[in-house]
Length: 310
Image (cartoon, rainbow, N blue to C red; front, side):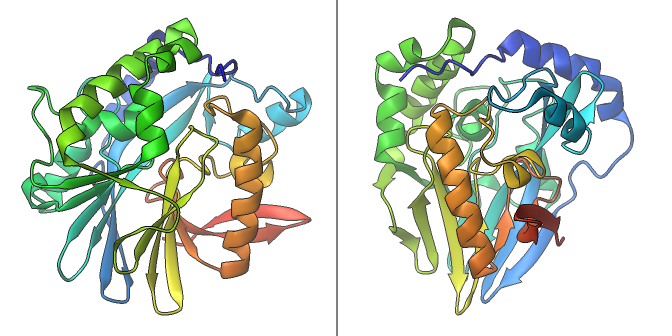
């Protein structure tokens, strides 16, 4: 199915990052790390930078006036709104498990900070034993290799949904994207070829290790997965891009996201996931939620809202 509403191109990404370059250079805790404990798991988030999205990229089925009203709360800065990147690392008694690779050095200038952030936190990429990939977009996959096309996490096994791998490896993946987005498919294919020998496929409810399972949240992409960390009666759900904005995704899940490959499915997935997360009272970690990206789903009127807890 063609991705008809996925209209932000690389040039627009780069232009947006240049516009906020001065702000990015101001003193701030670039490599601040957040840690929470879940049983015998230590769960950390590290920044990979941020992406600047055009404020004009309105949800196609959103009311225009309501869109303008909520955009300031959604993170608008001038003509852009900021989408931060939080990468999750789970330290178990025996493993060091990363959830997503980050952007790497070849996406846009405001991303690709993960390696420095890990180093600042005392983490050697060579010590990472597993990487779970939620999906194949550049800010999640392209960090699999470095400037020299070497594996960034050379000792790890990589876990990905077979449907996601198949989509990006298929020659028709490029055709399904608008012309200005076809570099996504080119980049994904190259990275998957680099890591293919280390990939293990996962499906709904598979455990990567005891207490860490994946589940289907497709819609954002064809094979998108999220990850549940569970110890006893407590759990943390690492969302990937199933919920991407602290206002738009939680309060208006029915609005089609401009970055979803399957907009109707993405909206249905958000609604179902919000119901599940509110009922379970699980903590959540969002890849693009305000740093460090840790919070919960709470009730707001007849719907939901995001509440940060760290």
